[in-house]
Length: 380
Ligand SMILES: Cc1cc2nc3c(=O)[nH]c(=O)nc-3n(C[C@H](O)[C@H](O)[C@H](O)COP(=O)(O)OP(=O)(O)OC[C@H]3O[C@@H](n4cnc5c(N)ncnc54)[C@H](O)[C@@H]3O)c2cc1C
Image (cartoon, rainbow, N blue to C red):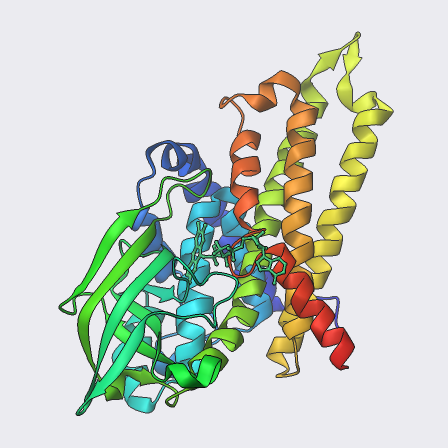
């Protein structure tokens, strides 16, 4: 395993850092407070090639590897976790399965505008009664000639309000359990497809979280992604990659919290000296930095394995689990180091703390990551 980044990876990291510091970070507080979708920033991300980082240039992407994606994601999420997840969903949950499973026609029609950032995508697996237990899909897709007619409700869909294209999972054959699930690519302006609810959230407030209702949504069978009954396989492959994206988002949140804590500790005085002179503060910072680096190595290892087309399911779950729990721990300590100021909206650490929590929940809760890791260990 290489510990040195390539020149190209370093360039992507620097480009993302410059953009994050110069454009995204100054807007993060306002975006958190208003909950407004950062459409201008998303356009800039598209211009930088960050909406389809791992997609082949043949289909409008940047043709870079997963390590470059992790580096860019960490930088963007360190400035604004909402912007980070908007980018992560488009890259990992939409472009990645289209690249992997899409037909040539689907890649030209859907992947290309998504990878170029001309269109935005979302991934609709969760339902009111099918979250961790995603195989319990109640949305149905019934074949009618050359089309499928889809009915159901999808819950908590990131980018749901703004997305142009959704990957939607539905039961084509209930008798087959998870082998009866199929995936469909559905333009959001299809008749019968509507947003029924928008969530008000603890964090990542500038990223929309929508509930969809699908009422007799008619989709041509050419819009099925992979084969009939392959939907669960598509979802699980996609989420393995998505977990690398969410681990990177957690790294970004945690690195921002650490950086701000160090700066604060160098300026705040108590008992006649700067607080960074206190061992108690130094030890917190040492532990924060150590956990952050450990999470970063786990995430880069998962990305490295994915790039080599090796099995990476367990490693992606480990990265997401550890990075998410570390982000929660590190942001808690960041507030502690800031004292009372950390509890106010005058300092960004309270936002990082609120944003960190979701990384322990979406794309599989921490309990589900432990289940994936343990299942893989006992099967080895
Ligand atoms: C802001 C946000 C954005 C989201 N974005 C998307 C999206 O874009 N697309 C999408 O499809 N979904 C999305 N989700 C849904 C998300 O993936 C689910 O919320 C998550 O998988 C958990 O499902 P649930 O909420 O139904 O909780 P449940 O599955 O009901 O879990 C409740 C609790 O039980 C625990 N639990 C469940 N099963 C087990 C088990 N077998 N062993 C141990 N513990 C268990 C869970 O860990 C959790 O603690 C999003 C959610 C949120 C909040």
